[in-house]
Image (tube, rainbow, N blue to C red; front, side, top):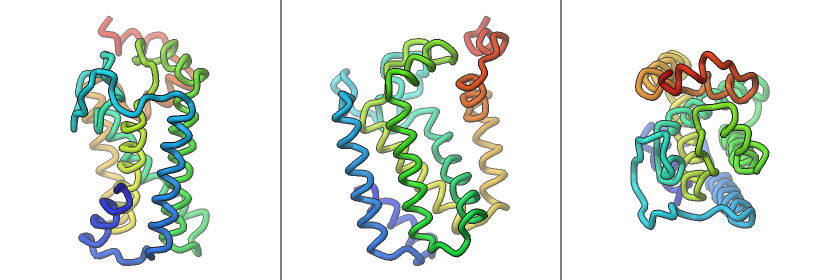
Length: 201
């Protein structure tokens, strides 16, 4: 399903450089990610009993439990960055193989992010005070967002994705006092003043 959605976006943008073989591999990778997360004990959908297209309350039990939220913007930026990094590091690889590698990397992060070690780290050091991990459907949506970002970057280049990434970072900073940059900073090297500001102190 995710592969079909992103393949449709690719076709609409005029990018026909990804063969069916890679879409099959990507779909299998996404299925494996879902299986691993389920095996880790992650619930598939929100325990609230509903599936929302959007959930916009960060400090709530339903954050990271639905199809999209404020952090979906960060995963689109992941796609921009993965495209740029792989284009630089492995320019001779086909677009399909680079998207496959990006999907594997994003999936690996989703799995790591939902380990007790990272969940506890988020709860201790970031805005996600009550974070208990992602629902599987949210993790799969995060992977899809990354793929969309990757395809946007592949079609329109840095003159589009760089300003768009900056816009997303500034927008989420303004709306929720958080973004990809702060999320990484607070996860790696927490700053008490930033944590207090994010909490509204």
